[in-house]
Amino acid sequence: MSHHPARAAHGHQLGDHSVDRRMILLSCMAPVVGTGGAFGAWILLKSIAIATNLFWFGRLSAETAEISDSAVGLAIVAIPVIGSLIIGVMARFGSEKIRGHGIPEAIETILFGESRLSLKVAILKPISAAISIGSGGPFGAEGPIIMTGGAIGSLFAQCFRLSAAERKTLLVAGAAAGMTAIFGTPMAAILLAVEILLFEWKPRSFVPVVIAVLVAAAWRPGLIGAGPMFPATWPLPETGWTVAAAAGVGVIVGLLAALLSSLLYRVEDLFHRLPVHWMWWPAIGAVVVGIGGLVDARVLGAGYGNIEALVDGSMVLRAAIVLLVTKAIVWLVALGSGTSGGVLAPLLILGGAAGYIAGLWLPGTPGFWAMIGMAGIMSGAMRAPLTGALFAAELTSRFDALPAVIAASGFAYAVSVLCMRRSILTEKIARRGRHILQEYTVDPLDLQQAGQLMTPDPATLPAGMTIDAALRFFTEEATNRSYPVVDPDGRLVGLASRSDALRWKVGAFDEMVTLADTLSDASQTIAYPETPCGLIADMIVETGVARVPIVDRETHKVVGILSRQDLLKARREQRTAETRRTRFGG
Image 1 (cartoon, helix red, strand yellow):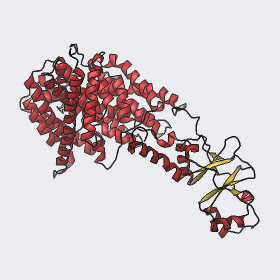
Image 2 (tube, rainbow, N blue to C red; image 1 turned 180 degrees about the vertical axis):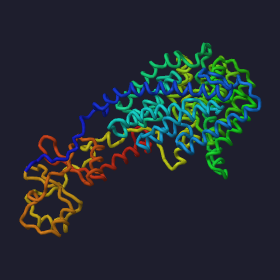
Image 3 (tube, one colour; image 1 turned 120 degrees about the vertical axis):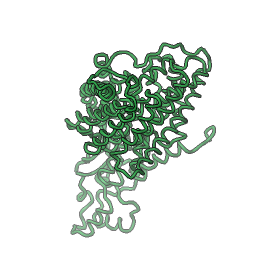
Image 4 (spheres, rainbow, N blue to C red; image 1 turned 45 degrees about the vertical axis):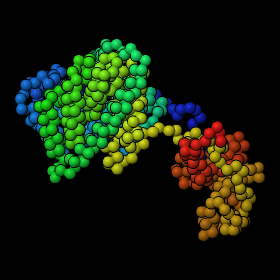
């Protein structure tokens, strides 16, 4: 009889990372996705420019135009309403997925939709975003490009025979590539992928994302332009407590992020109470946007000029206060109405304005503190502290300010997680009945090996035991559901269980037939002392076997047995390590 059962938890050779040749395949696909994300970003920016020129200047042009330069009089209220009506129709009769921030929809597709985005979304999302922003919607292009770039990556992945995890890698690669092309922030785009979209840190996903981002960064100078988006030339504050002051600004904008997130979903709740179809909500919200435009036309559209003025330090106090208050109102109402728009650019403006105002009473230039506020509010609202810090540094090309930027991001993040259960992104998903945990931890089962959790020297049954004796044993003496069956040398022959005994009892059999003659090793499940417990857990789920024999790899002798209860010990030990508090090893 063979002593090498067919189903064994060999897995892969143990190492620090799980990686195979599939990473090479995905890495070869990544340049295509990176190129698609870069061109998708270029198309989106040109579409926004065309829509802006059509709505506000009555001309067909793809040149960049500022809404604040237009002179349309009271039509400033009507134009956002017209654009929002178009979006409402597109959402109702096209696809509901074009509504919302863009990033939550991408997250939901990754976690609950097997990373499958449709061609319809890939086409309608940038069109709706261009109409929304071009008609005065107070949004930026980052949310739409993350959804559009992700759709490009997902569609390309669906052309091949890939797993859901591999499709996720290419979806996120496309999203990060699009963000890189828009803002010229490759490092922040990679960190955004890790902190918000991938929900893992594995070579299989990280390397292709890096390649796609680098390809998009290479395309950017020819498509959109080179250099930082908001270059800053001011000197750093000459004081020893700049980092401490930056942490204080981080606390302020962290509280602001929590307030904005709470208000956003309160506004959304109000729209849900309206006695009209959701198709009309964006148009209703656009009335507030138009009125805000009457107060200050700079709150309309993406508002990248506002960010530039804040970083330059060229905005007066009154203008900064009006921008902060008015932009917050129109953005909260517009986004709460369910139109197509994003959160990043408005957050940068609001955090930048808050930091700018605080900076008027702090050492250094207000533009420096505007950058600090931008990093902090992005970190606090999106729960992405590393992304927030690197994003602000790359946008301004001021890496020498990183200590202060990191302080603001870290403290804003701390305040945010203490004040809000969920981020401004995940709250939307939670309201659809989905729970997301953004804390990344190593599975305790992947840290433990079978030899550490198994019950050593388990009770066994001899291979020469007859079926009649085995029946009496399971009826009168057995305390477990199954037992390893071993030969005289202690080598595994099979696994006898209560279900086997029931089958023998109701069937016809020769009482003198032994367990060795009856058991078949064709479907036997085994593992080795060095096998990761995570692999054994997967095997238990796949086979339904509740107890897995652990055998020595060389001699094939049974050295232990691992049950489902044993696997739960790993989780209990992890929980104990997190909650048990001691002093000096006591």
